[in-house]
Length: 287
Image (cartoon, rainbow, N blue to C red):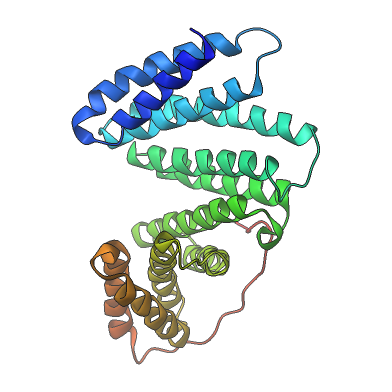
């Protein structure tokens, strides 16, 4: 199969995957696309673009399988996608250039995103510990490759914002389901704080999604702050999140729900002792 035919098949599979009614067809197409790109990268001298396309096809197939309720089946292509994305990033990094500029920024962001999405597929497959491990790995990859997130490229900062948000969500879930897990709420609050800082810097009036993501993180952060007793800051975060939700309207139902949960938690916690907690800045989290 030639490069143009491979690309057409890839685009066809991606288009079919956008509609639930054609998911089964997309599933079959992704299998063909993946085989075509595996053949293309077999042997020495494989084009970097073909390796990227193979990784993207594996990642998209993993996400589709999870959406179809087959998350356990999606972990294998998701894991292979991460391996190929790592290979792609190493090749791009070896060419030099600024890590905050394309193409290194793009390649690093795709690797982090693949790790984050594999974490969520693993969680859907009933593997919460694997989810946390993969999110920790995503954060570590970003910090190791690009340094402090505020100095990273725009796509990497966006991917790291999602990694920290999902890490906060995973740690919050562990704390709520296993309250004996030590300082889980504190660690979740730290991750959420980092996600907030990154997402605040990415707000763009031309991209409503950035405001949706900010409101979503505020909902998680407020819950974490309440659990560690920082009620004043939680109330402030809750207010900021609600202002975003009011601006977004009906499209913001998911973050609005998180904020409602936080408001109920805050109402129950009122009267308790709370104080501002210290926070660590960037760097690997402990624990």
